[in-house]
Image 1 (tube, rainbow, N blue to C red):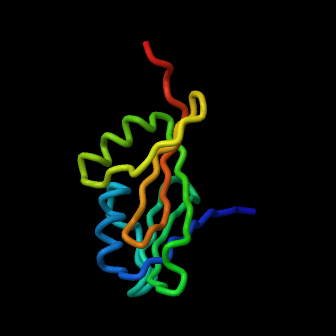
Image 2 (cartoon, rainbow, N blue to C red):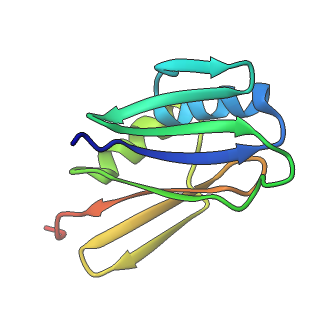
Length: 115
């Protein structure tokens, strides 16, 4: 049996959120199921989507795990979004981004020790 993972992020303003998430994720959505949703394919059978839903906007928490998170943070910064915080737990770090609604989107992974 195939299993797919979809993480949903409710937003108030679909059009502006779409632009922000394109910069954060570095690509156009893989598809648009309708006029108020956009879906990005992150890996095989793993997706994140935004959906206009003002009543639920602002409460999402998502984390993407990367092999080289620091390099990805730099690539994202070149497109505009900047992390608002970073949590450090030994060699595992998580950079935290927040969209205009306050949804938390984390980018985490193991970082190489200095030196």
